[in-house]
Image 1 (cartoon, rainbow, N blue to C red):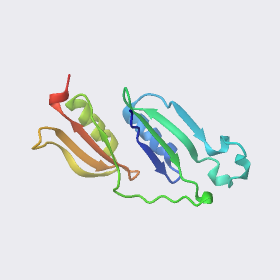
Image 2 (image 1 turned 120 degrees about the vertical axis):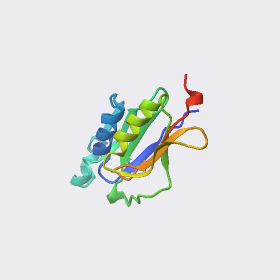
Image 3 (image 1 turned 30 degrees about the horizontal axis):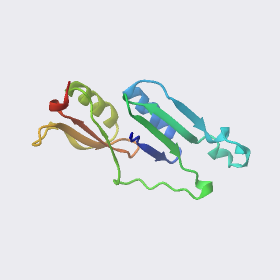
Image 4 (image 1 turned 135 degrees about the vertical axis):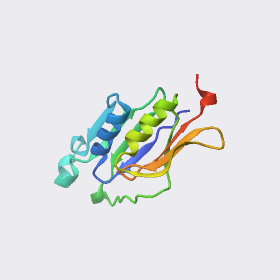
Length: 142
């Protein structure tokens, strides 16, 4: 089984994923706008440029995915603290790079520090309201 985080945005999925791509690197494996869907001309003009689906591989077995909500279909986005994306990099240096890159412009909850349970850990909310945890476990390092 694989678990891929799927995020919703209110019109800024493309901007958010361009930012995530600048940190993680790689290329989008999928990117479709609402205007590419069948009968897209029936959608409000301002919603045709919203993201229907976007995918960014961020690791060997992990793909970060998202779409924008569609207000004309009654969808609303409520930003909150109900979900975190937990990243487990393979080195302390990679943990710092990801933490510093993704937290830029956001709000740090816990800075990267060695924790009592033995891991190097930090958490934050990025500038798009997405909660992240960066957790490097030296015992699991290869």
